[in-house]
Amino acid sequence: MASLPPHHTELTVGQVAARTGVAVTALHFYEAKGLIHSRRTSGGQRRYPRDVIRRVSFIRVAQRVGIPLRLVAEALAGLPDGRTPTREDWALLSTTWQAKLDQRIAQLQHLRDDLTDCIGCGCLSIDRCLLRNANDHLGETGQGPRRLLGPAPATPPGPEPG
Image (tube, rainbow, N blue to C red; front, side, top):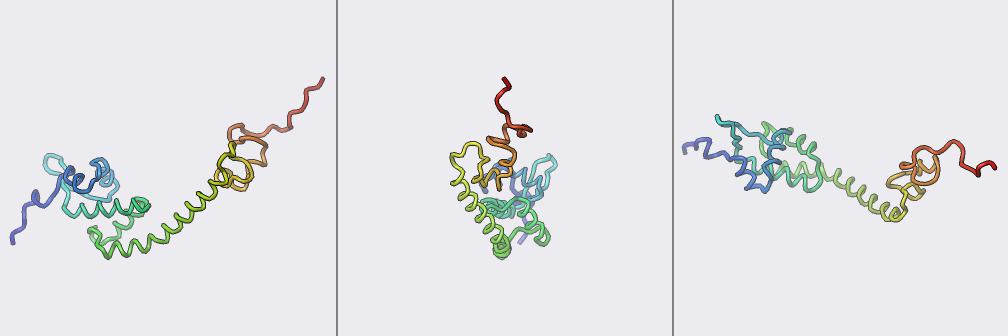
């Protein structure tokens, strides 16, 4: 079977955007970050290999489950010859990412639980607030919203001499 000329096997940025549901600007961003690659035509237009659709889908799924682009880039860079991830690649990567995701879930649950204790406190510097002022370090500098008021005065204000 004769191979098709490149213009039959490559996609424009608009075609990739339409097929993946990703904005053209996001594709440009992914390319700037080295996550995907294109070639330029003599007129300077981007042309992507068809397998970029799977690569972009891989990126989007990883992002959707909370994997930072930095880790996605590392994973893609680790693939031989920059190839598109396979099911086996995803299975391996998702296993390694599970521990990170479990840790993030635990952090978010802890954050949610601390948020419940904090609602309504106002100044966020009381001893119960674990979100904004863990261990109430600001409480040692004085009363009230310390982040807004600045440093505590050297001596507490008293009645004016008479």
